[in-house]
Image (cartoon, rainbow, N blue to C red):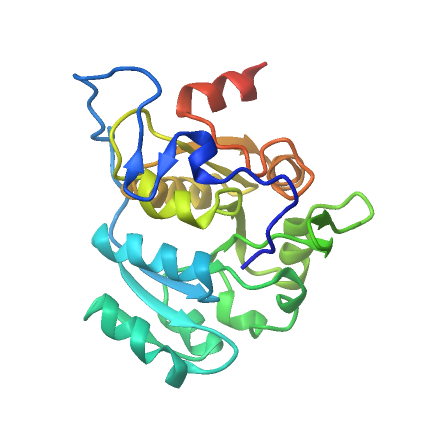
Length: 244
């Protein structure tokens, strides 16, 4: 979970309410069915605050299984698991990493290092959805490095992809199934196959995957202080920005 950023856009400011996305342009014949869908996977979500629990809900709704974990232990996740039903289970972080096919880090950035045994994520896709802050609303000074660069350094056997960190949790909850143009989620990474896997998940959730490039340069675009952080764009707007 990330702190609220000063001046952060609320969903109402980008055409959203709690019930869905109001289309920016009339699109009575808009076909929101994506051209492809990702394979149903068991996704481990490490961190179950507002953003992590929101991701779990929409993944289950899209037909995926989830393994939930956070530092306080699986016994505290009973209500959320009961809400999500048989597609959800709870575990300790290391166990979730072992059981999942894909992992998403949604914990505070300062808690990432040492959170998982490196062997637990060996050869697995590890989505860095964390945000590095140095104070309330202020990006952390990482000396020119991207936060995902550090995640990849701490977990050298993982295929790290930066994604799912730029969108407000209220927007994430409703925009993927709302009418109108799909909103973009960004992917950055050095492994093409890993980015394709994450892009398939994003598509399943009703969003448009947009590749921002390698982990270093593309990840910096997405992290706090970067031009794509907390900037809801449609697929067309995102592709136009990337290509400019």
